[in-house]
Image (cartoon, one colour):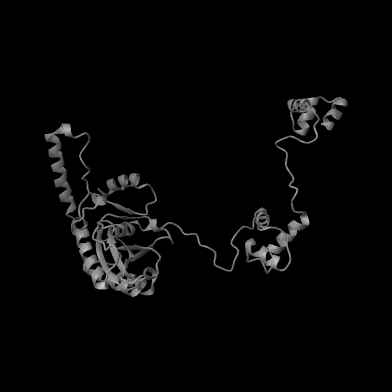
Length: 345
């Protein structure tokens, strides 16, 4: 304000002087009405923290974090180590602030840098025995902390359980033997099936990978710790665990567990009408019987609607077969499904 008055006394216009300083004439007048002005009241002014590091202290922080001793450690480790030696430069948050200013906030440590995982390749099945999904889940034993392990393979197009077994542990060898048995029963031709799974040890074990190569089956894997990449197996296991017949506590032995799973698979494949495939059984869809069943069902609905149209407020239930099933699609299923269904038809 002293500079503004000095400029005015020298013949300059006040509003021009205010423009140079970056303040309006009205602001100057308001401050004068409020009384003596002893400090800058502009909200746009840049504050200088009273506890700001000096240039020498700033350089000490940088020199410390980049030293041979501390270059692999985060500030949360650096500051306590220095404090144990009777030394203190700045707090952990100040160390982080300095590192952020110098663009040094990155991986610090002897461990491997986390890899960026891309989403699994989008897959689509238009027939049975084209895409399988499999996983392993726990079945409780009669000893606390001990489990039996249920291996299940599902065809995502038909939702049919094409193979299962209960073992006493997780093993790539057992999984490979089970897959070989499935390939023989389903008469799988080389290069015709993709097998999707998570990143567990049995899924990526040498025996399993070798069997996949021998059978000509293409592997596909989920991202680590992303269960959404393997939705069909996860959904199947929920159906398994929430069945009323599931033992409330445990299985007495592995034979009891196998007997229970055998009954479950028979119900699921041959009796359960799956909502994802227009409420036909997985076995009917796997063998191609669903088309005729759905056509007959549609005719029944249409006849009922024609007989009493006043009882139908909307069209009959959709009985068109699901022609394509997606695994980890890139685009929303609703739009893509319509386009791909037309192409498949």
